[in-house]
Image (cartoon, rainbow, N blue to C red; front, top):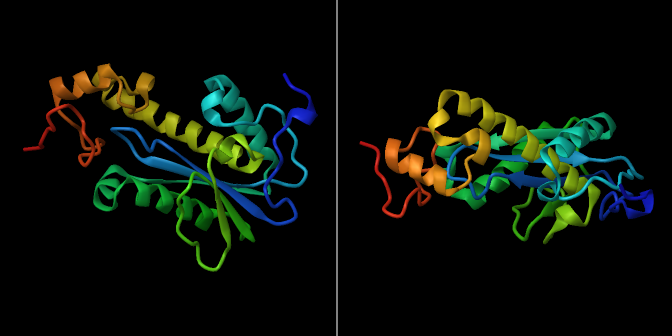
Length: 204
């Protein structure tokens, strides 16, 4: 465990109500894309808060509780596969972030987004940050919430569709997942605009 001096800066704009935003599940073959928006109080110092991909599942769940208890406001939203297919995954990821911001109890004064693309959220100014989830705690917190809530969603879907091993792969394109699609066909939870197998399948 690091010291408090190892903690990420709370936000690029700690003097403002800055909503950190990130998504989870953009590269998956199945399931929704999730996004979270988190406004942290300044100063927020926790040396364990970091890009969710760098954390174990247990650590992410521990930090989710800390984030939810300490945040000024937080929210999680999703865009389902049919809508992803209709508007494409980039637009769906941004839409999920907008929906999460819509759900915040407090209106942000600024929005800080992981990545390099975003669409304006009304008049609220925003900035994008490549690898922002490893640079600022509010974006890292959003990555943790988006990831944990999406993982739980996919684990629930696994109970209905165990053949696709979503409890293990969370909908990502593993060899086993692609083989299950080849063997059993796609479900209504698969993103048909994605390349599910080498020769794309069609629902009849």
